[in-house]
Length: 471
Image (cartoon, rainbow, N blue to C red; front, side):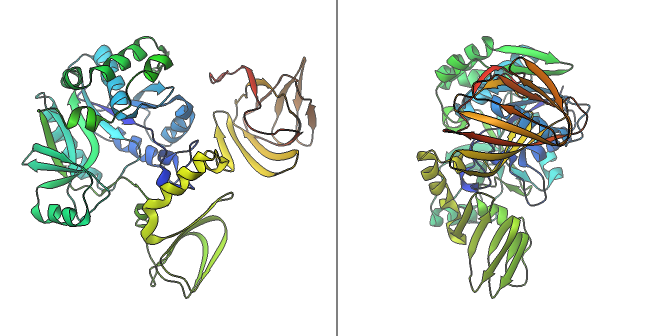
């Protein structure tokens, strides 16, 4: 194995609210072409020469979303390892977990290619050539970062000052004047957050510069639980040791301190899709500078972006607006204020508002549910269960439920009874009853659930058994 890609998947993507939310963060947001960033990252890694296994470090709650995105890629010849974190501790801990795992499984000479899951690269050939150069440097014991050749004075990225391939220093996000000087000088690159190194080189650097991170990750990995499914491996990292591990980025922990850092410069059409401004650039404008996704009508409007995929949106006599319409949340902002969307998201999160956490349609390991309507003492959901999907055995203290099958076959456990329901058949689950819903068929199961009770929050649930490890 010449090298092993490691996909680091985390973060909320707060600047892409309302499409990005806690339960469906930026890597899983649908881009204008229908793809996801994590799916594109995986497919790009699969296509690199010499790749036999891909490691993914992500939160355990996102494993099913990750698997769904990966299935869309043609990767039958590639094995997967999933290192599942119970809680995020930033990139230094995630990279430490991957390095320790690789060293234990494949030896300390293993070369790792670290790839954030939420970046876009348009020129894969240029990227592949840069990877080859980075792997060659890594095999010499160097820690390699990828520097993106800037094409504008960008203030939203950190920079790397270089002398040839040697890193002189890392620089924080500059002001506009400084960024313009960096662009004119030709010695600075955007810091992409992609790295390549041999396991022993990073272990040595972490031992020297962030030993607490390395020690915490080692304990969390060694006391975790691993299981194999064919050639694929899943490691559930232990919670308590990881909670004690310092939360710090790899830049602060290692890259800004180590003395064996090289930089491979590359122009590959890179973007970190860090705000709606980056998404806007993925959509072609019309003759008046307007860009749209969905059914949008413009009348005397200029330089506007509208993402409206669920209903018709009309704009009259406005300009320079950013509008994102979802079934349960609407964003309206000035085009020049896209970076400030994160402040709105943070305010929603501080008040524990549902629209910071969930979409109207929520993805689960077994399928999805969509809230159709809710009011005082009632909530109506559309539930879709994948073939073979199985909800947890559960009970609720404060609500009862009526289930009506629309299509497919439902296997229902209701207290001591087990029944099969077909289309147009229903059942009633009283409050306090243990119950479970399964799809034993080969087609999706669709049903309508009507909840009634004094409290209908998603946290009114007691799980007694769950095939997805949530009990």
